[in-house]
Image (cartoon, rainbow, N blue to C red):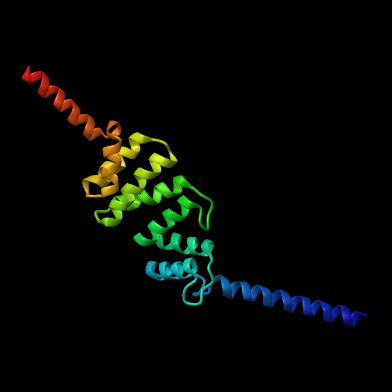
Length: 179
């Protein structure tokens, strides 16, 4: 009896030590750690999980985690996809406010991605937040950079566009000075 208790105790100790050793190896494994990986590596792995590419299973929640890590490191494509996923509730609960944060980061640039983010913010404020004034401000920024859908929205909604209001005031001043 004592012998079986001693053997059980030894087996339990070995099993516990093995489990803890496995946890430690996993915790510090370079394969699972995102801290030391480049933004591009994280982004590419996120794309693989998102699309089920290169032998990866489709897993939107893993993709969100990887895009988030890459986005924090400044990867603009990851920021854009992450914002879309937050807005649409893919791999994460729908979170419009979080999407706005990421789109605003993108909108600060001076490239096509920034212009698209500005137009996207216009659409979010128009459709999701029902704030036409903020929508017009973002659409105006995108329209000034040549975004056609933003220009169309402003033509359909001139009452919200500050530039349109300024032009109307100028027209009124001209009419009164010509009288």
